[in-house]
Image (cartoon, rainbow, N blue to C red; front, side, top):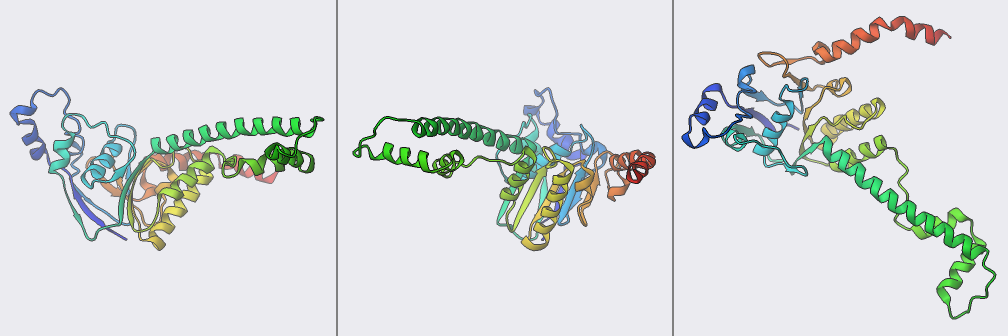
Length: 289
C-alpha cells in the first residue's frame, strides 16, 4: 500500500534563499543544506518499500529525519536538528495519495533502549528469584512450629515441602516471568510489536542488534506487512539482507546524481559477493569433509 507517493527536497536555489535571509546569517553550520542539492537529488518517488542506501556521511539518516519531521511522524527519540533544519523541512513538499492510520519512525537507538529496559527487568526478576529460592529453602528445612493463625507463612511452609524449587519460584513470580530470549530475539520481538496494520514505517538501520538469521526474519516480516497488512516502509540500510527486500526501490545516496539501482549493483553488496566468490573453494572443501 503506497500512502506517501512523492517528496520534494530543496533545490540549490531554494537553499540559497534560506541562507540569504538576514536573520539566519549568524549560524555557523548550514546543516542540512547542500547535502542533497550537491548530489542533484531533489525528487523522491516512493514504492511500497523504499530504501535509502549509502555509507557513513551519505545523508541517509538526515533524509529519514527530514521526511519523518515533515510528516509529523510519531517517534521516541529526538532529532539533533541544527540551526537550519526546521527552515529546510518547512520548505519541503510531499504528496500523499491517502492517509495511513499511523506514521511511525523507529531508529536503532529505540531498539537499544528497549533491550536495556528488558535487561533491567531481568535483573529485577533475577533478584526476586534469588530471594524466593532462599525463602523456599528456609521454609523447607524449618523445624519450628508455625501457628495455624499465621496463614500466609503456613501456606509457604506447605508449598515448600510439597513442591520443587522451580515450581515454587515460578508460581510466585507470576507475570514477572524471566525473559529468556537473546538480545537478537528480543530485538526482533520489538519490531514485531511496533509494526502494525495500515501505517507508514520509517526505519533507520533496523538491522542493528540483529544476527544474519534474524535480519532475514525481519525481511520476511516487512514483506508480509506490505502484502497482508497494508503497510508502507521507508528504510535506511546497508544490510545486504534488507537491500534484497522484495520489489524494494533503492536510492543510492553514494552516487552523484543520486540514482535508483538494483540491489546487486550496490558497492556494498558487490563487496560481499566478491569476497565470498573468492572463498568459494573454502566452502566446497568444508562441505566435502
